[in-house]
Length: 165
Image (tube, rainbow, N blue to C red):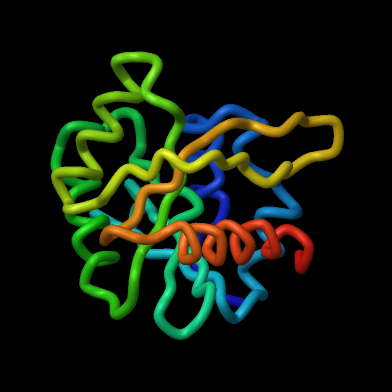
């Protein structure tokens, strides 16, 4: 198990994402036992102020599952530092975003575009994390242009994660 203050990470996660966008406490904590699941944190004075969790889908393919900063510290540059740490890793990178319906959604997409990510229009639904939740329409953004075959491969690998937890 990775040596990390999970309670603080989960607190940031809960304050940043709707319940249908993450697993409950125990299921989320159990991910720390997975070899291909990783967390990058930003800390000040031994306190975690933000994190990015990602999966190694394969040797050259990384998928961001959650990325959040303590609400009291947003806008301070912490997120940029964490994301740049992630970008320094080898491999193609992928993440999910909500469709650009609201100003917040559009700002989030623009943020990832500022890091060089590409918005893919392909139809995609997030894996269902909890029983009783329904599918959520999202989009995949990628660190480079991808064709439909690559998109489908990535989507399949992301969906297979939930089957292996």
